Image: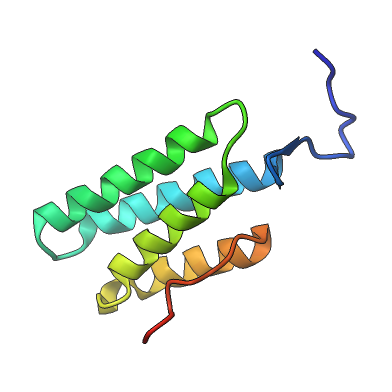
Length: 109
């Protein structure tokens, strides 16, 4: 196993390890926010399931950035009609912008 020099991030499927860490941290914050929102439990459970899928992808040997982006957009799309979820949506948007993942969750608004 070869270890990357500390000044260079290791690439994993187009997203570096720093990006993967940031995705995890943002997802954790969004998870906490979703737990406090007032909407049907089944919707909340669906979002938690999507977050679990992203976490599974993050821990894969070769994370699929297309899958990660699709699920992050789906989470944001599910939250966008909840006024109290605005910060979570903006946090996801900023994450996608910084990591180069496509942002489509606002399409059709």
